[in-house]
Image (spheres, rainbow, N blue to C red):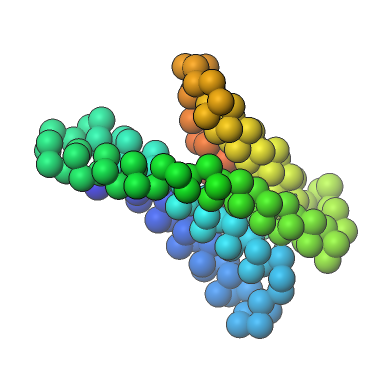
Length: 158
Ligand code: HEM
């Protein structure tokens, strides 16, 4: 398996750990449930990157064809899953700010706020690629995606 599968799995396990050990568990607060749901959609889309990486690095032709078929099947849903994730995460952030007030000295809030902007960048460049694809838009979409995963990890750790 490609290293990105392990990275995605680790982020997911970290999020589950935070949620299952949250003081409100199992009657979770709304913002925590929304955060987890949005993250699941983000990771679902980001797994596409792990699949592309596997196609590039694998020598097994059958495996490459199988993965390419899976990617193609998800094609019509990809941009909608991403857009839905942005909307859900916007509700998550708003709900968290409503609950605690915005805390400028708290890394959870700062990393979350930055991650929302990056997530918006991922979604916007995704739609821009759809309208008129260029190499620059492809790279921007990818680098926004990598930065998003890093920031989400910081958000979950602090
Ligand atoms: C304006 C943006 C954001 C703010 C202000 C924010 C704030 C917060 C806060 C305060 C918590 C802790 C909840 C608690 O302990 O009761 C939290 C949890 C969480 N957030 Fe965010 N967040 C933002 C963006 C994001 C983004 C972009 C993601 C990406 C998926 C995300 C995913 C999660 C998850 C999964 C949790 C639950 C696990 C945990 O508590 O660490 N959040 N968020």
